[in-house]
Amino acid sequence: MAGRISDDDIALVRERSPIADVIGEYVQLRNAGGGNLKGLCPFHDEKSPSFNVTPARGMYYCFGCSEGGDVISFLQRIDALTFAESVERLAGRAGIQLRYEQGGYVPGRQQGERSRLIEAHRAAAEFYVSNLTSPEAAVARRFLSERGFERADADHFGVGYAPNEWEALSRHLMGRGFSVQELIKGGLAREGRRGPIDRFRGRLIWPIRDITGDVIGFGARKLIEADDGPKYLNTPESPIYHKSSVLYGIDLAKREISKRSQAVVVEGYTDVMALHLAGVPTAVATCGTAFGEDHIKVLRRILFDQGQGEVIFTFDGDSAGQKAALRAFQDEQKFVTQTFVAVQPDGLDPCDLRVQKGDAAVRDLVASREPLFAFAIRSVIGRYDTSTNEGRLSALDAAAPVVASIKDKALRHMYAVDLDRWLGFMNERLVVERVTEIAARPAEAARPEKKAAQAPLDPVARLELEALKLAVQRPALLGPEFDALGPAAFGVADHAALFQLIASCGGTAAGGPGGREWVEILLAAVSDDLRQLLTRLAVDPVKVETNGEERYGTAVLAKLQEVTVGRQLDALKARMQRLNPIDEQGDYNRMFAELVALEQQRRVLRERAAGA
Image: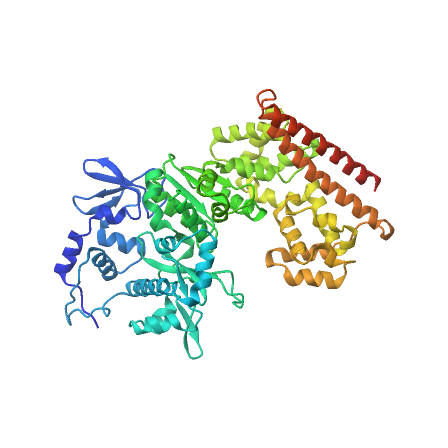
């Protein structure tokens, strides 16, 4: 059993560990005068900074929560370390070799659990990097090359390759003195029938580092078709890895986030790489989980969040991306700083955008951001046919709770005015009164997600459901015209996802006349979150006589196509309003011709629906 760390060494660790530098890796500190520094407390939520650091005395103290101490106790508190582990980490940082009393120092024996797991992960990261140049890793190198990444880029981000063997990493680490229990506890291996089995095999590997730069886990991308695991596999929860508070790339981005007062949140490892290489070094990503409250706390500390900075979320332009943005809306007001959304209209993620259109296009994507509130409100409006009075009123009822949930009264009023303009009422008083009325209700009634759950009651959403029901029960009634609609024709995210499921199973052509076999094909492919909807549509009766089903199917399809054309018309009219007919005559004339063609198409669809 190791003895205690020498008192002289503890004193030396304190002396060579400047408290401002150590705390500055977790919290953005600013000059507070008198030799003091100030920042947002990492131990409790606060709007204005009350966390003080006094470098001359090597102490910190928060006047909000009364937490205080020295550099050693800070690490103990923020990273849940023991006193010895905290001293050991600081010693490693300062290049100090510690001495232990009652038995002396034996390298590798006296370290705490966290230090051992960190060391194991560092060794694992080096092992994966060394394997990226092996012949077997050609598929991994090709994956990187196809996405525009060179060898130097892989080195910069520490990307590696896990050999497609059962225990290659485990053998390597055990040969370095790590125990089976440490490998399993750290999530590097799992228990097999004959010993430890590597968690990651035949995969491209990204090291996930904490804010100080220590490797605490890995993200792994499937490369081999025979691999029956998920596309991306992450380290499980461990004593050093907690996915709800981990942001990939935070170690590389923290200084630029602090310097620019900007953080860009993306969805994947390659997106972080693409943004950094394109000149946006403030990008980070969550690791296999939704962006949440703990992630917010990390960014707020680095941003010195007092309202001057900005957090930009990038999401895919598809329905899943919109759903992710609306989830982010729920957390928006936990930031003091402004929050934005940047969505690429053609649906390309930042990595693909960089490959296809270059670095400038990635920078333009971030620069084209729009406020998250505006994006959330517009996303709700987009579910409705605003070409009719009924549709506009339905959109108002759905969007008003979103606006009403804005806590800042002045900002709420401004978005209510915008909502009137976006819906085309030209009656500010009506819209503002509606928003004010909802805002005065109990908080539960004003929650946007509660209203969103009622969206299927909208006539357009019901029409979408009816078309999907026919595609599930009577696919032959709809035919290839339904398959050609595309997911964008469905304003409700779950409806768009179900359309994509039907398409992935061969579309209505594969369904033929429908029946049990077709439904079983769909059920075999459906995800858990869509199973209930699919099941409901499969059993809900088609409310029309058998001899009228063909006319009914034609009418439903024509109405849904008309809604899609209506959305295209609204978007085109909005673009035309921004043009000067004299200075931009060519573009205006082209759009006007497109407008006439779309209006003609809508008339034809209305007549078809009425005739059916």
